[in-house]
Length: 188
Image 1: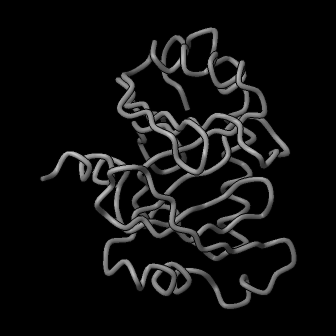
Image 2: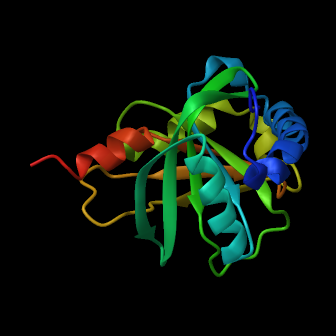
């Protein structure tokens, strides 16, 4: 995923790339989802320890700029815009989401999800996302579907989310990109 020399603080993420991509493609195949036909907005990591989040922040700052940092859902979340995009499957992704540890403990520290932008009416996001998935995939054991609406202070755009996970990786759908959400805070 990374191209060129990698900050030492991100070595564990570089080593986790192959696992994440394999799991992402396996989930997409189970869902009948054509990743190449979708527009990925950003990729996210998960960690259990504040020290890991601080180390990753230091590493991402060597590869990009801090685009936004705020508290959402009771924990800090930092967004980085990378100087060189990451090669993630069929996409070039330049935005990384780094949440600090919260109440939920994830099975794995490393890459956890990608977020797809599905343009259209916010209230119809779930229907648009579910229409992309094969009917039989929705009833397969081990597939979890969750609707939510994360909200940061000052955001003016609604940010509904549909997340589909197999417990290893998650694919999330939103109607807006993270840049649009963050920039909405600056609008009068």
